[in-house]
Length: 138
Image 1 (cartoon, helix red, strand yellow):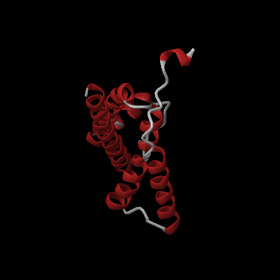
Image 2 (cartoon, helix red, strand yellow; image 1 turned 90 degrees about the vertical axis):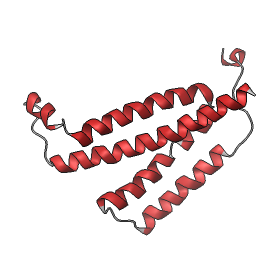
Image 3 (cartoon, helix red, strand yellow; image 1 turned 180 degrees about the horizontal axis):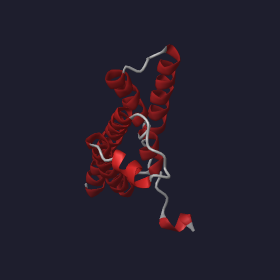
């Protein structure tokens, strides 16, 4: 029963990590769009200060939280399941970019999203355990 509980926690960590990381990218895009052009890097203080906005700070914090959850996920799930599932971020960002920023949804982009969905399903629906024993890693 403990294995099932660990897997459930891993899947929950994965799902929340995916949502956090996708939302963070949308926040970062929002913040950078509001800034427009950044000061030159040779003026590092002005460059750094221009990045201190609520969407950018929030996006970075959300990304850090999502990454922490990803690390938890890696302790509980096979990487060959978790990493392909993280591609769902692309779909969330695709939908968010359309909804929040009015980015176009074209047929080629929809086809690409369908390929991502098909790939995630194919890679994550395999129910066979694939975690090698520690002795096979040597």
